[in-house]
Amino acid sequence: MLAEALTMLSLVATAVSAAAVAPRDNWGPPSLCCFTIAEAGSGSPAQFDVGDLLGNVILGVSGRPDGWFCLDLSSPKKILYGNGDNACIEAAPDSRFSCLDPTPGRDQYTLQAGPDGHTLLSVNGGLDYKACPNPHGAGEMVYGAARSEAGCRTLQFVAKSLTGTCPGFTG
Image (cartoon, rainbow, N blue to C red; front, top):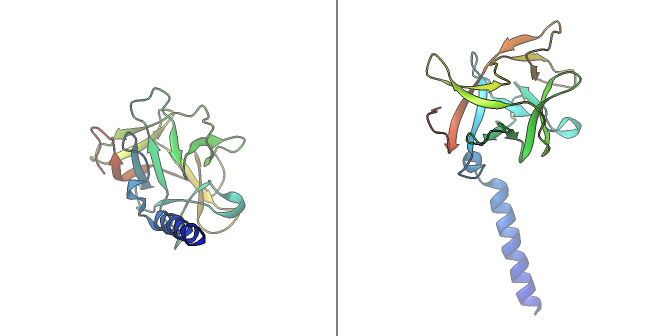
């Protein structure tokens, strides 16, 4: 009985450790279009902050993995998921781009073909986001286009490493 329990525990531990190191290429179910995003100009990848700021989208922190995002392009709700199964929003009061919990907000995301053939991430019909100095640490924090603070700059996101159901889009 003890030997069977230890064998089962070993199998569970092996499965959990394999899942922890599995590549993020196949992050979402095949019915979703999943991708990383990077700044259109510099190619700097979007990442997720850690610790108390977990879920905030940031740029330019070395050693941090690229963030993965998913959309159901056939859904009229146009919810972007990131950082696991958390819905992404431009959070009030400062329009911070965050993926903090599964409850979707009112923001609508989609992919658009750019004039240069790249696939761009759109929010609420627009392509612009803002990158501002991160008041909490390294890199830049990403906000919605409405952010108007000194030191912020406008950017667009290109979707890359598309996987799943992404009809008509490449990247």
